[in-house]
Length: 261
Length: 262
Ligand SMILES: Nc1ncnc2c1ncn2[C@@H]1O[C@H](COP(=O)(O)OP(=O)(O)OP(=O)(O)O)[C@@H](O)[C@H]1O
Ligand SMILES: [Mg+2]
Image 1 (cartoon, rainbow over the protein chains, first blue to last red):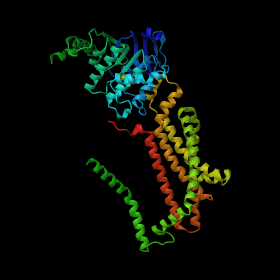
Image 2 (cartoon, protein in one colour):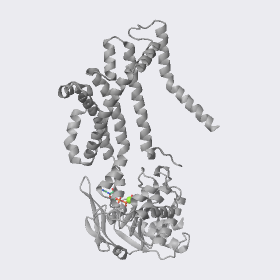
Image 3 (cartoon, rainbow over the protein chains, first blue to last red):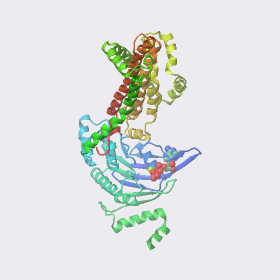
Image 4 (cartoon, rainbow over the protein chains, first blue to last red):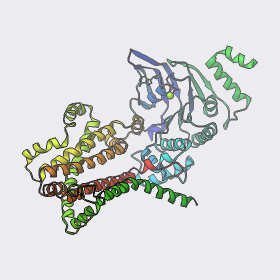
């Protein structure tokens, strides 16, 4: 299939301005970023700097005010099944069982005979076996988020966008979910773009970390993470990268104070 | 042990529920026996029960009830269908909503009873005018609740369907309608209540059969016991309808009633 060959993501000179009551609000300023097929990229930045907006433009729910976004040869202007997204809230359909929620995510060109098998496999992939017939209301937050990831994956997107998918979870569940996402990514090797507030999460998962400035968001720095996976969060190299990101955020002075304490 | 507690609690709740009606009947009975009430205006409970049995066994109550029920069913189903279709269209199209909204706002506050003389003039005193009253009565609650149900669909859930490239009809059937169902069913529940009230009102004004007619006719003959049987029957049937709709609602909206932890 052609779309499997060329799904490099190009973000070129992208700026975004929203109309608001009194004039306009510039959210993103001249973003340039290329993401290779199979790459894992994280985006970090303070609240309101336009991270969600950037993801929404990558999937075509919003359009850039200036510049353009391409996936391979296709210009992104409206949503396409090439790109999947996991939102901050699970956004499952409450009136459907988990099984049926997943079925809703299957692309329409997939033959009916394969549906059952795909649903079974994806439910197992995220560790929800035995809950096929349960409704979202019966799930904990972590289970809902796992179901939401499974629903995005079952659509077989070439690029998966994750917008703070674990933000609402407790620390232990979050670490579990990070391991799970890593496992799925290594298994399926599709492009993943993760927005997160959790610096450790970004380092643990990503090939590269994009740091955005405050609104209007500009790319401040892109930090590559060249550590073998799975990564140990307590090694010196891990902590060094952490320090680099914090420096980028806060500037040298504040970090130095922390050293002396 | 836990089970016993549960049974105890259900029994207690049932006791609380029937307490007030039973007390009322008891006071009524005592007052009748003590001769505090005028039997020509308020017959004793035993008398009312006797009349009830008589009306059941000679088939009068059943026949009138059936006539009314058929009218309600006809008017209610047309009104509901109309309300849902119109409501979905008005919920989906801002333009249509603007066009029809003023009409709705003018006609909705008119009490059902005010329509009856006009409808009799237009449609005669046959079945048509009565069914038309019921249609109008059912239409409003179903229409308004359908519109608000369609409008209240979560934008976030729509976005999910959008990124999966679902067609417009699929989005309507799989996202918009299911999320509007709770509201639509509330409308239907209110609608059938109004339908039942409408049929009685219409029959009291002009009819030769039906439960409303039975009451008016009995009043003309000064039979308060028959009037009371009719009035209570209306109440009981209303209660029954509501109970049935509640059961259907729980079945259809099972996802709303499930609890965490299976
Ligand atoms: N549709 C919109 N219309 C107007 N303003 C918007 C719209 N969507 C977002 N904004 C504004 O754009 C800015 C960036 O929003 P965005 O959701 O992209 O931030 P974010 O980086 O994801 O923040 P957070 O980390 O809190 O999720 C915010 O100030 C927000 O209020
Ligand atoms: Mg956001």
